[in-house]
Image 1 (tube, rainbow, N blue to C red):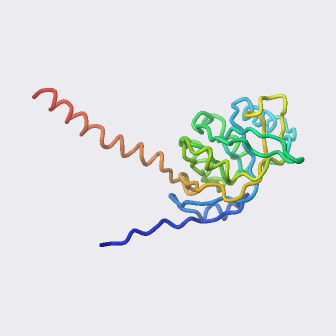
Image 2: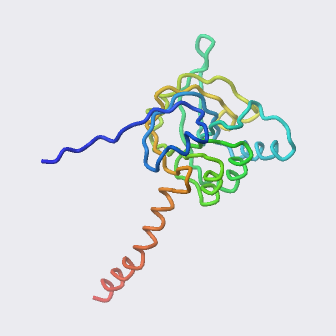
Image 3: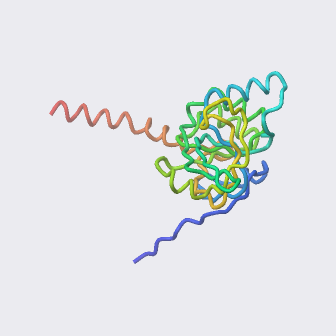
Length: 210
């Protein structure tokens, strides 16, 4: 009987350098330590782009950093802000905005669920940036990997939409679903589905005519 091999899980410290991002391969599973900025808000990303356009500072420096499409909620205990939950949101909602943000800030990693579109993939390849895919419905697991919230910005927004910077320890595992070389699991699946569709339609038509 053949033995199954458990996939290797890498450990990474955030933020990555562009060279570290390019060293990762599609499908790598990783645990994340370090710091990350998160938001689930469309208006938040629109503000980032506006700030880049007019040359004003963001609430804290995001150049060469990490940005996750993720909502969050915290409570204060003994002078620290501890997470009640973090929960990834669908990244494709932000496809129109993310190429500008990736290039403008030189992001080296992005994360969320559901992937990102081809123009985002091109921007990531240009800069040296990877996409970490988080499983939907895994909020309790992911929350266990969050140590504390360090600061927030744009506090006029609801908590889930603010820019929030977190310290991570053993966050994940998450999957490199878009690498820094233009390869995307999501685009691969779309191509496979498109290739199979004619055969499926033929089978359905043959079954209907029986």
